[in-house]
Image 1 (cartoon, protein in one colour):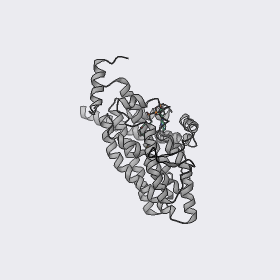
Image 2: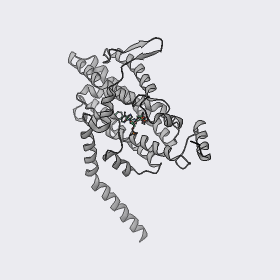
Image 3: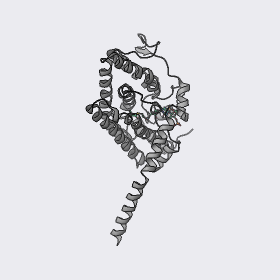
Image 4: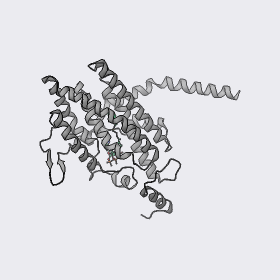
Length: 312
Ligand code: FAQ
């Protein structure tokens, strides 16, 4: 397909690593892809509070409780910056929320898995935040200005989250036999779902080609998944825990670890709504939205009263 003059100019700006700002001209599909990705990312931060919020009342010490509470609040903040970034593209936060609640928009597959023990909170911080950072560090250089700037602050907080997760794992791995077993069980259950966070294999990724040409994405899904494995294996070794993959092996020639792919059938099933917690997560968000209706109504009524008073 021939590019129009506008499209050519736009692509030249992207190729020169210029930031695209909300009021600049952009192709309709660039806008739509960003709304999808940023919106999905925002929803992930919000839904991502649920598996961890589940443990706030049961954290083993006051200090762990305070840390977890702060982390979960950070995720809420990340969701809010990201909704703001999406709003600059001409979509409202209410529309995005409604599309999440109706199942039209997605959130990360990982949050459809349960957090069964305290060790899962360690593994979520270490593996899930670790995967999130691996994906988000390059996105600091994404072509859309508001998204790239949101990523800078989010990455700083996310690095702290990962350290707190690893710290929990360290405590568990060096604790009693029962604690060590819990830590190992958490890795066994969360390893493959963490690998799925990077999206389908490059062969199956429908959006990567165009998104990379537009620098909405900087790396392919498989590139980031490989980097994550390479970074995480030595961390597991240091903990004295085992990654549940018999094919995991350093490949001298490639300079990378060889590893087993996750079960992609399970991944696509979770995306269709059939993961262990999909229904719970959406129900929790639907309840929060309807429980909050009176607050939204009251604030709108108050704003209308104020505006009317000003006119009078
Ligand atoms: N889950 O063509 P691609 C966090 C969908 S971090 C669900 O490869 P794309 C922090 C995809 O939408 C997690 N759906 O797609 C935290 C598409 O479907 P569609 C959030 C997935 O967009 C930590 C289809 O599959 N981070 O929350 C997933 O080019 C701890 C085809 O895939 C981000 O969102 C998946 N894992 O690449 C919070 C990062 N993977 O829409 C609390 C930004 C793919 O056509 C606690 N996003 N799909 O119906 C991205 O970098 C990209 O969107 C990818 C997917 C890499 C996720």
